[in-house]
Image 1: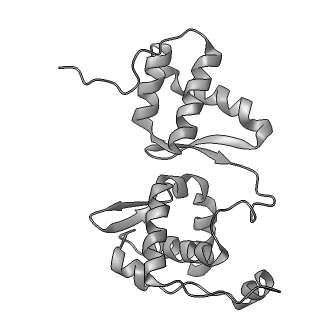
Image 2: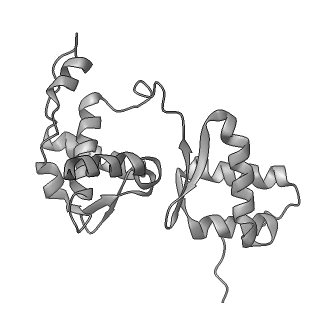
Length: 193
């Protein structure tokens, strides 16, 4: 018995429509598995091997907007390549971003690459007093988030693809792996030195 596809009948010879459909699917879902992308490509073009060609064409088109479709081991996501003036583009507060940084470096800093809910709730946010002063010239100094705030924030991080959770253990999500990989590796290398 053949498994029913979530994509339906999408076969088209129009390369513009093929690129549009794949890009729209990535925008809608934030991240997709490599298998999902290949299945969609097969539905659009008739051959899943066209996936890499399609991604190459999409990336060429997105270059002017400083965006790129990136692939990890098993994940595909649309990523912003522009590193200028991104600090005001987040829905997260400074304290929430500091907590996210603490969570990611906590997970990445251990061999198991995962932490339990309780371990994450008990993490204290990393503090860099000089950065706090730079960020807060006229603002209040940063505050430690409550456990309830952290718990709600962890749910948002999972929903947005920044973290993954399985059996109450959190690991770095596909979005973090794709968008922040070089930043994480450089920070871990600095901490190890």
